[in-house]
Image 1: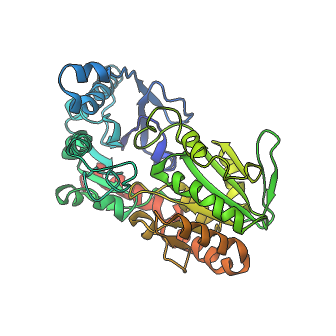
Image 2: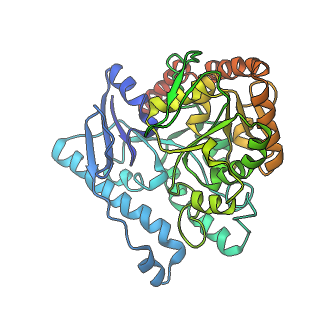
Image 3: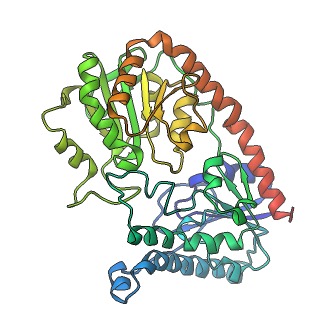
Amino acid sequence: MRILLVHQNFPGQYRHLAPALVQRGHQVLALTDRANRNQTPIPTARYRFEPPDKRKVAEAGAPLAAHFAQMVHRAAAAAEAAETLRTKHGFTPDVICAHPGWGDTLFLKAVWPEARQLHYAEFYYAARGQDSDFDPEFQAYSLARAMRTLAMRAHLAQAMGDADAAVAPTRYQADTFPPAFRRLIEVIHDGVDAAALTPDPMAEAALPNGGPTFRHGDELLTFVVRNIEPYRGAHIFLRALPRLLAARPAARVVIVGGDEVSYGAPPPGGGSWKAKLLAELDGRLDHSRIHFTGRVPYPLFCALMRASRVHCYLTYPFVLSWSLLEAMSMGAAVVASDTAPVREVIEDGVNGRLVDFFDVDGLADTLAECLADPEALRPLRRAARATVRERYDLAHCLPRIVDLVERTGAGG
């Protein structure tokens, strides 16, 4: 079977699927943005994406179309690269597996009308009841905000209209899509390599640039995000630290994450959310006990999860992070936000602890309680890993995704 994997940041969600399909004997090709620097052994075609000037789009009288304009320009670049694959290299896929979130797929049906499409249904925006109006501190409802949010899903609706099947990693994410699209979606997680991501009572995590080394058993609290921002609860976590550090004078905190913005808006007035929040907390934090690492290599992330006494994970009602399940696979004791995507994975008091997202004092107290009694965390750690092995293990998930790809390509 000829399979095309389309992702602007390939391999992305296809990091396990791509080699598995090759091992099955399929001809596998990837299509990605030329700016993508990720290394992969998969033969890869690249398109050149030059985004339109959002300001010019707005000045032309179509500010609500600015996001869609970005998607269409990327789609055109991807379609031109696809046309080259078809005409110059004779490649016509049986099935296209694609993440439609950046618009790559919008015109692929014009290039390969007979190819079946399997889309990665990651998230479908809504004006109310999900992420866009969750946090009143930063997201006061207005008609203008609602229209901007709804405009952001135009390309997703068009893409799903061309899909023959779709896959979502969690039930929560699948249920963000309207019923007409939901019927296409199978819920199969990308998979966590539980065989590799195991607990290690001898774990050591040496922070970069001459920072301290932490070992399993230390009173270490970890918080990991792609970028330090409200969508992943950075404001709640940082505001909980003064109370937490006062309650646990021996505790140390490691915060992993960059200073950019992955989701939502940048802070008013510019700068980073980290700088804004630290300015808010000026004089209330003991910085000798808090270590900001920036982004770290994956082996260091794993070492931190294995050494951590308590790991905190917070999120708006939004896409569930891989890092949560990876941490659980390594036996982390997780204190997390009581939000819909997390409740699908964690049951309070069984395989982790849940706290109301906005309860800063409650979060601090729960973290302190868990740090104070590592023996009481042992059942939570075992249950966390058991949850991953039973429901999210790559050994179970990957064969199901491979089967879905093959069924889609065969017209099933």
